[in-house]
Image 1 (tube, rainbow, N blue to C red):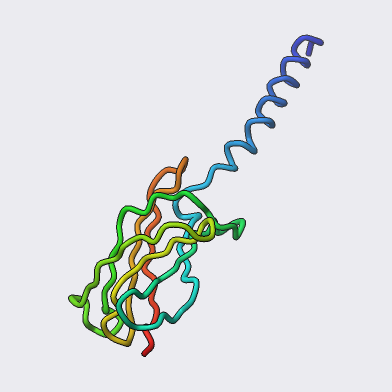
Image 2 (tube, rainbow, N blue to C red; image 1 turned 60 degrees about the vertical axis):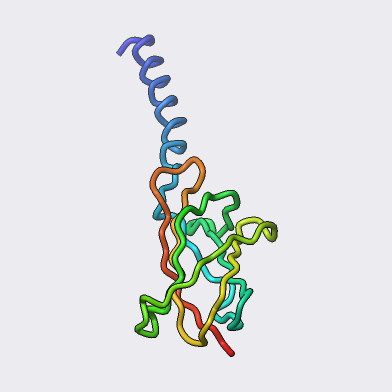
Length: 134
């Protein structure tokens, strides 16, 4: 090989090596999940359910996601038609998303959330089960 060919190969390898970590650093929707802040919430009107959106590989909380789908029902207690509306509660710790609702009955509740993490492809969707306590 000529000296020019050796330099061209070395340059190509250097560019490929520089780009490889960037391509591998991209996360996908499956790299994120919602987690309950507490597994039990006090029953009643004005109850607040808090969840944390986490980047699973790093364990870090993810702020500024757009939560656009919410559902709260009693499907864990075989009452999927028993639903309650949710209203976002502003403020709080970054990466923690809080929702005010009326937990009309004690028992098992399922919170389903759909969100978009800014800069990522796809959507994050999780179903979280918690208990409303008297």
